[in-house]
Length: 293
Image 1 (cartoon, rainbow, N blue to C red):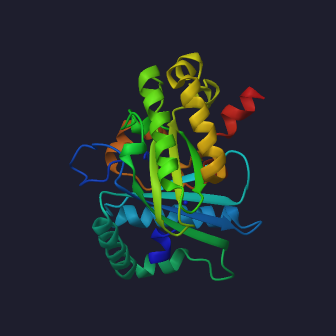
Image 2: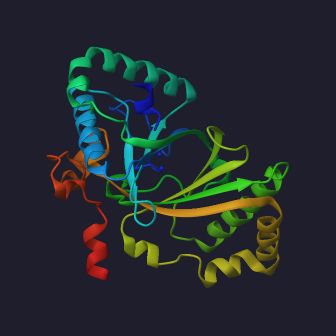
């Protein structure tokens, strides 16, 4: 059961705006601790995996679990990947969640046994990352209307050993320019504390639609706020301090997610669990992308 809570990148989130407090409390911002779990599914096993994941979520609902899981699938890239976000208010809460989910696994063992695949494992690989929020490097938190979020831009940055301070300087310059230009964007920066190479940072930017992706917010106002000096410093640090920078875009999959009732109520047409039909298993971005094409 621990592996189920340890899988990757919002009801978040919504993610970025998912505060993880008691269900009766109003969300106050992004989670202080985020577990990112990425599962690579074997070719031909995605449909079966999705059915089991959906059934697992239904058992958590039956057990009234207080712990959220946001599922995301990539818009471009590996078709056989699922990423989960588990938000927590603290590392102590993360530890408590492990125990709670183990207890649910024991209490509802018969339910879990009935949905588990009896043959080979669905997964070809699985990686867990435990991250802490770096509010000092983030911008414009929390994101509004968390139940309306549909996509997540996930940037993974690896900093060279000994260059973390330079990277932090760069992010603060970027954030200051965002503030000055009043960029319409929400950005949560997390530092990985376990599960990845030292110096790994995750930058999460939620979107309500793919149209937002086309409205690149870093226009003239941002460049003017950054200034020539700031731009040169940002570029120099990127060259000197960063060894890896990858950007991915994911769509939330509500049928593999487990969110609190308040999030479901904010947009039941999207977040409410539905029977695991073929249509429900398709990526939530499929139809909008087809229309644009």
